[in-house]
Length: 418
Ligand code: UD1
Image 1 (cartoon, protein in one colour):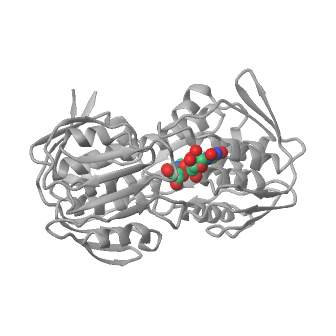
Image 2 (image 1 turned 180 degrees about the vertical axis):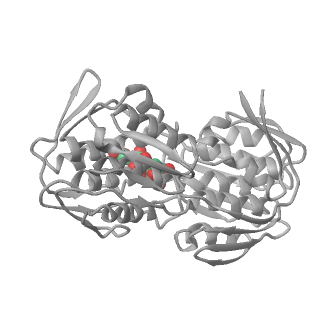
Image 3 (image 1 turned 45 degrees about the horizontal axis):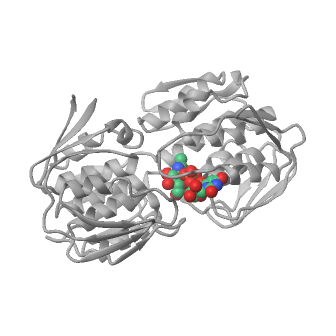
């Protein structure tokens, strides 16, 4: 078992860089299936979720190799339309392979997908969206079988702006004859990034980042080399790490304009921040102020993927903070671990009330999901004494050697094989 051991109480300072976004790279890897030639993802992050997605692509018949810090995907061998069960269960994002498989092969079979255990995570919106494009869906022995032989452009209206469902329909529609219009689409910056990648391959998608997306089907897509956008959640986590230690850091390569909800909350907590695209400077106060109220929402609202990290900050801030988790129904599983470290938190359903304490103390704690695990690391950085964070594999799903990045900023953190 791997553990991150943190000797807390050391102020972070210095300069660091963020890599490409997990949540942009995963759909882009899936969209690579649509091309007729090899595709290269430049600076693909070296994280577990990307490796699982590559393993799935290989099992579908694609070739993929790491070339330096890029990943090449050659989709010309794509033959299988059934997602491998074991791997798909490990990665919820595998559900948006449905769209490209249907686009390319006109058929796809999948079991219910897996991923972080942060709620029910149904896929009804994905399926409804695909049905609007003429896909016939049936359930056979626990498998979802999609027949796309009569696919056509269509109008999709989402009841809720799901990120994955929006991406899925975009990818299904690219090679489908006619025009597809998605209403109430998710507006996350990663959607715009996917649009850029698809258009780089010769697709015709517009409106990414807005509520209505229009896709005009094209006959074929060519290969491309593409660098995904920076990871706004990793950048936010690094800023939060500096904030919780009273530190002073510069995060390079971050797109501040995609992160305004996070930056504005950190300012509310007393951090001084100068931001431009490509560079964010943060100076934290000696003690953070409570943020009073934080509600997670689809973009441009506050991202649910930064909720746990902000909760970590609130545990040591002056005053009381309230968090309302509106995107996922089970995203406070890390709270008992914070309590073990001396935090004062009350949870009722989707609401957490956090009364800031003057100091946390080190403890042995366990990651329950990717962002919750990262939040426990932040708490460990601020705590007095030693914190051991177990289940590092969950953190490795979305952070590239987080301990090395934090050590470079002055944190005392090491990875142990226990
Ligand atoms: C993506 C991100 C994830 C982030 C989330 C919300 C990737 C790889 N993952 O996940 O990190 O936390 O957006 O910003 O990009 N829902 C349904 N039915 C569906 C689909 C979703 O009810 O068919 C619900 C979910 O249960 C959840 C909410 O909609 O409550 C948001 O989910 P969604 O936007 O789809 O998130 P993901 O694409 O899974």
